[in-house]
Image (tube, rainbow over all chains, first blue to last red; front, side, top):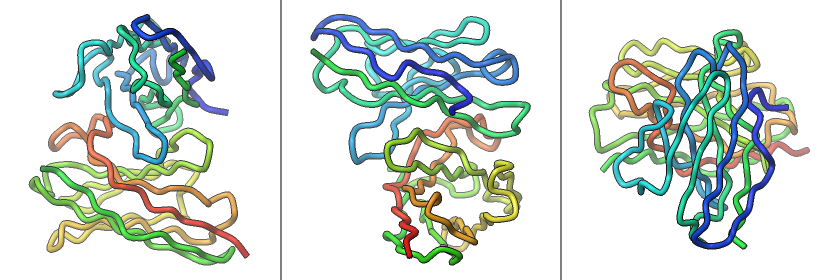
Length: 110
Length: 122
């Protein structure tokens, strides 16, 4: 059971938009920045979003992040077949004194 | 370019120990903290701990305290993760990951090693 809760899967047609939620608590998301990662099969995770809504260089603006209270959201617009992957949220948890990840959301492009 | 190159796959018996290395290049080794993250097959990532490359001080997730030791060698820009008393539950890919923030970690994992598969089986 992950500390951060994500939906197991989301799907949409090419060109459409999907959003992925990440729910936590006051000991993690509520008082810390959130980051998001994309993981293609057989590869290491890749940083997509940091500081809740900032993109590292090279990450297209189709990817966006937001945070409100104890939840965060990743948005992907203009969905492409190459976006099919597992997506994870992450943050620091004060109570656990540890970095924590969500359980992951599989994005399927229909 | 920043690279983290890890040691090869390991197969261990229950009760044994394993040591995984992570050699960094393409940046000033002492400027960025290194994390270790593991991922069991079909599961999400799990943060294990962090090491300060300057002084070698570490912070471990409570789950791994007493069983994991992270060290570094500044002369070779290499960090190590040593785990003892292995069980089948430790079968996973083990990744090193460099923090995005210089000097003060913010727990953003910007650069990752290729991963080292550790299999624990009798």
